[in-house]
Image (cartoon, rainbow, N blue to C red; front, top):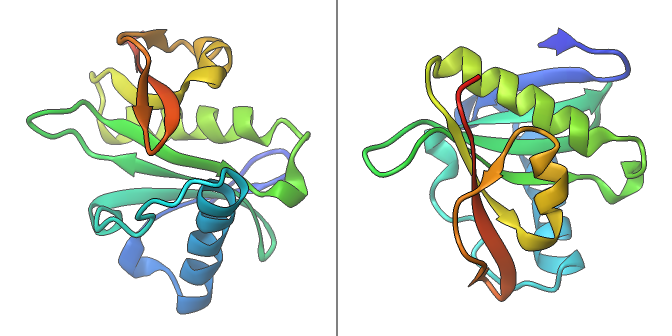
Length: 153
């Protein structure tokens, strides 16, 4: 764990979580993606064991989380499941979360660009972090998305 200005950055593999910490992270993802965005989809998709999980914490309070995929034959390193707790919005945590996720991807997979599947309405936000749109808009689980890549810097 590393400490930033107002939060602790925690990056670990799924099996390293306590049952309560894992529950809190998965609950927040379901609350944001399934309930808040009214998007019934398989949140528990079988991919979490293969990813690193980044959390921003304030003590025991989960502020935000993201899932970091390793590169595969078909994909660059990817950042996904980017979620900020509804109780902590408006504090620029989305920006902090993405900056930490980018840093972690660059440490884990140096010399690689990073890709995301972004909700289309967030293109400007991700663009401010260096991501460039690489696809036409498409529906993913009923929500408009675009593919974006952050080229090597």
